[in-house]
Length: 223
Length: 223
DNA sequence: TCGGGCTCTAAACCTTGGTTTAGGTAGTTC
DNA sequence: GAACTACCTAAACCAAGGTTTAGAGCCCGA
Image (cartoon, rainbow over all chains, first blue to last red; front, side, top):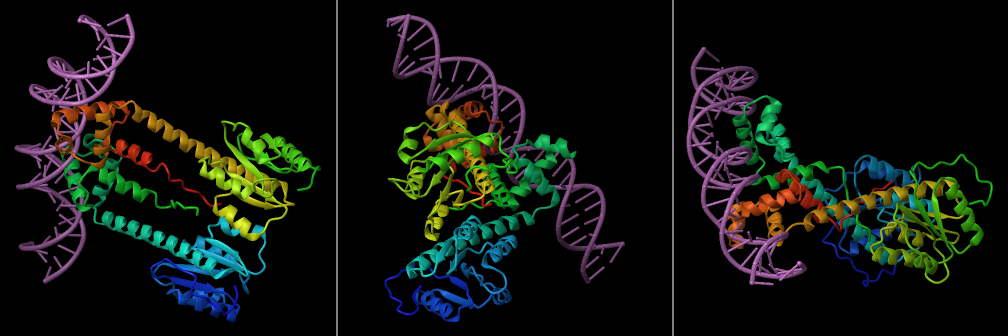
């Protein structure tokens, strides 16, 4: 990336977002910050991973622009840590001294982009857009999951049991026999459960439960 | 990869599979073939993409080992073609003259691995195993889809309509009003439909339909 | 053109689900 | 300990789903 001489011919298509930059090269970092801010993005600049870790993550769609070679921990190791911590922050790597194995490793672990310096401004902005789009999707999914769990939280233990049995397609009388109560009672629990989780049909209930179950799953689109 | 001097210390963990190698370097190609065959894999060696395209794809879990730089079409362009044709064959790239943008592009498009020559035999075998595993999963998914479609094929038009309405959670009487027939008739179609698609409960039906719907979707696991 | 097969239609009958009402028990608060 | 709350239990009644049987229309090959 050439410092200075930013042109307005580049474009972003997102509706705001935060970009977290970790790079120990101050002039480069500042230049990157100017570019990103000029596109209406909010920037958070860090000189090291330690600095980054000390900071609070914005509660908004974000992505991380990370130099591979950093003092202390390498960017690739940090990527692994971030993934292990369950923080699904999309990462864009930039590097002056990259090689192919490094690139492959980063991409395999889900990096959005791996850019070798020097790169075109637009390439970075495209990557940032893609990263922010992914983070938006991830955040949406997380929120959906939280909302689903909230709906389950209002259920009593019995109702919860019956929810899962019903979602499996078992009959009231089968459920009743399993847990040793009368079918009439199962019906009551079932009715209350359906009201509490706010579903009108068995079909809706099944879809709700299935969405809930595939929590660990995460489908990635390839551009 | 060093020609000759193959050791048995390398390992594969798959239960057979086909590896399609496209590389214009004959000695290298042959050496690769020996390595793969020594691990119990079936090999198909091609000197060019044209040769590969003339051949028939094995109807078994397979993966493609592709030199990036080939006479005529480049390996990367070929990857795009293969993907566009809907052939989900996992691709492992090998190259002597790779760079980072090339690597990133290949990985973004779903390549299993991108190996720079020289590489360790085990790295290639690991990649082949991963590729074969992915292809096995893909083939299984395809087969599931075909089986699901076969179950729908035995339905009459009316039954098909009612299947989707029922799976949406609509009541018999609502369906009846929509399509202008008596509720009694809907019940009959519904009953026949459930028997034909071999599901015992509405829950099963919903899951069947939902699996069917996410045909274009393909979740990729990151290693 | 006549039977045979397939589809759509529908009524009758039975099973299952859904809702209301209500009693019982345990824990909590005042 | 009385009142309150939350939960589990269950019967009674009504609504919806499931199954069987059967007739009407249609196309096709004998």
